Length: 311
Image 1 (cartoon, rainbow, N blue to C red):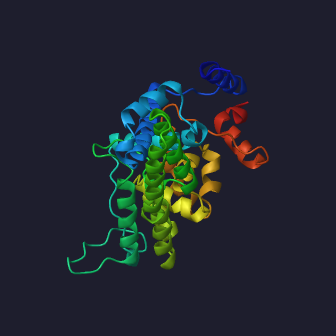
Image 2: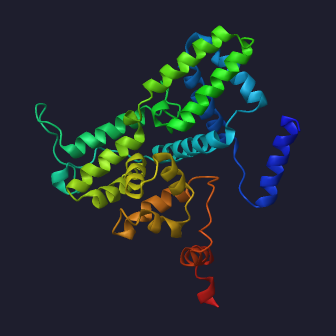
Image 3: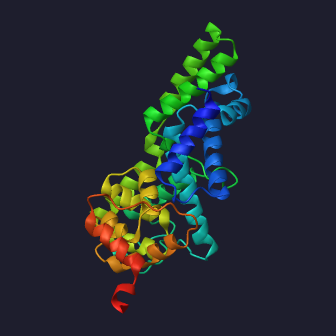
């Protein structure tokens, strides 16, 4: 079966499985494709001059990316998180530094003197902001940082890129050896400790040590500091950051409280989060789990509103 026909059949199957589902907008397609292109380019650049990243993307974008099912979720999650954060920025939300641990997550503390060492909470938040900044390119486009990649997925991507370059070289044995060493070097340099997942765990641990993780999560929601909220929720639930971002973005209102239950005590704090997500156009909302009838009923009741009581 040729690739074009296979892709058409796959798309048809998806449509038949959910004919009423919201399809991707042009903005969503462009963002996800851009994230994928930059990720492939970054991986190719790690292998040096042996790979022409522009030719690689031209070929893969025309014929399909190897490992597309694994990359699709990651690129889509990064693109949707970016859309959500840009929406908040356009509506004037301001992300300020969190309160120091001695404030209990309340009002911001006065700036510390230059020679005053940062608290562990401040260090954790700074590390999170640095890790998050690596998830943008030099001109502010969203990327998947290499150090945020699952090691197995990273290895698979590097091998696919190297295999493409080897085929392009005519399967030259000397080139195979050079590419193999380049893959080995890139894998050795991969450092998840620099990634967003490790930063999220560190920030959560610093807050938990002084018992203010719940207050800090509520403050993050109030300030629309979505990276901080995603990071804390991911660490509390032992999720990867990207998985938690997608879970929050696609959650129905009734699913948000259970999803954030290990983190938030006061569910009224969810209101700004619910409002922000409701404004995100073309959001793919996940259905409640089949056996979670309480959440399913709450979600259905929310859509019906007061119609039942008016009868």
